[in-house]
Image (cartoon, rainbow, N blue to C red; front, side):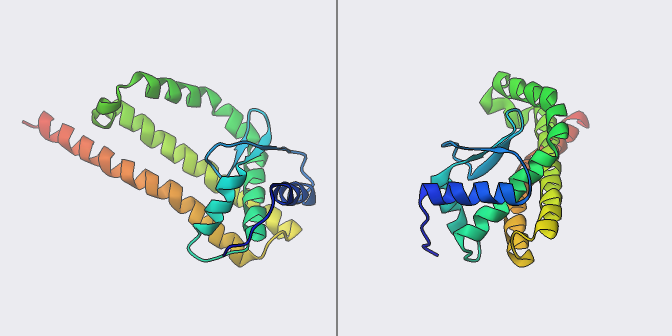
Length: 186
């Protein structure tokens, strides 16, 4: 679907969706490489205009850009509703980031403590995503922003990207544990 919207039309649509659910979250345009995201530290939604248009075209089934933007917006607002939990996770996030910087790239997949931390991070990310989607579903049910079918399609597609990444690392992690077990039993 080659629907084109100008930057200002996209910004206006997102801002109107934020207002439609009676939330007061700032919107900023930023080239992040991620279609939309919630910055829980600054309490703002970031949108990468070019990426969000491309991401809409990557959906398994075509969807109007306007619908896609509305679904993503209420999803990001679902994260805003969970801001306290996100803020509470900040120390652990910093710890993980530091471990990633310190671990030699070539040894990461071979390091059990590192991979255990990666798996914990995946689980936390998926939990935050699922909570944001549950919150977005409540918003959508109450304010009727988009039809339920479109909401579900974007939700399932979005969650599948997190789960696919988790599955790849889980396979590595399980292989690492099996190898370590075999070495210890020799």
